Length: 318
Ligand SMILES: *Cc1c(COP(=O)(O)O)cnc(C)c1O
Image 1 (tube, rainbow, N blue to C red):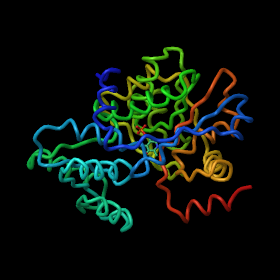
Image 2: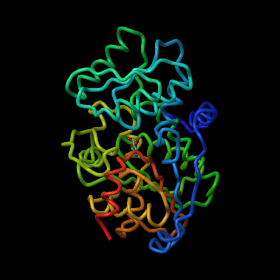
Image 3: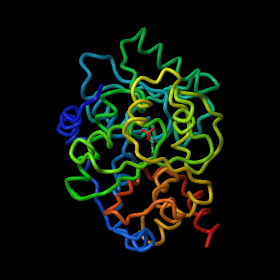
C-alpha cells in the first residue's frame, strides 16, 4: 500500500538528490487542444528522466545493505546508479552481453558497476536476484514497489503546487509506477482531477492487462517509445490495481503520432525528448486529447534518445 503521506515523506527524503523541474506553457499545443496546455519538464531531471525520484526514495529508505542492484539498462538503471552514488552506496547494474557499449559507458560514468552476465535480460535479472539472495544487496525494481511509486508521486504534488486548478494530467504509461504515484498524489488533493494514461499501440502491456482483467504478457515490439515497452509482471503486486483504480482514460498512439510529438516539442517548444515522453503532445496533435475543461498538464518524462535517431525523426516529417 502507498498513501499520500508516503509521497509527502518521499518529497522530503529526495529533496537534496533531485532537482525541481520547470513547468512551461505550450502555446501551439494550447491552440490545438482548445485550452491551456502545460509541459512538466521532467526530461530535465538529473539522469534524464523522472525515474530518479523513485530510485532515490527507495535507496534512501534502505537500512544496512551491501548495495543496490537492478537489471534495467534504461532510465531506471541510470537513475539507480546516480542515486546510489549520492547516497554512497555501491550499485551493480546487471546487463546482458547484448547491451551496447554506450549504455555500459553511461552506467560506468555514473559510478556504478555494469556487470555483464549471459545473453538475455532474463539472465541479467537472475544475477540481480543472486546478489540479493547471497550478497545482501537490495534489488530495486523499476515500478512495482511502494517506495518507487511514492517517489514518482512527488511529481504530482509539484504539479499541483504550481497549477492548483489543473483539470487533467496526461502521463506516459508502461509499468504504471509513474501513473500510480502521480494519480494518488493529485487525487488526494483534487479528487475531480482527471488522470489520462498514454501508451503506444505496439506492445502496451498495461493496456492489454486492463482489458484482460489481470496481468498478461504481450509480445515486445520495436517502438519509438522504447521506455514504455516491457511487461508489468505476471505477479504484479501494486501498479496493476492502482492504475485500474486511478486512471480515468487510456489513449494509445501509433508510431507516426509519437514521431509527430517528438518533432513538435522540439520545433515549437525547444524540448528534446525521447519517444516515451512525447506521447502527451502526440495525443494532442492527433486530436485524442483536449483541454477545454481546464488546464492540461503533459509530463515530459525523459530525454534519453539516441541523437542520430532524434535527428532522423526531425528530418522524416513535415
Ligand atoms: C519508465 C518510463 C516511463 C513509464 O513509467 P512507468 O512507471 O513504467 O509507467 C515513461 N517515460 C519514460 C521516459 C520512462 O523512462
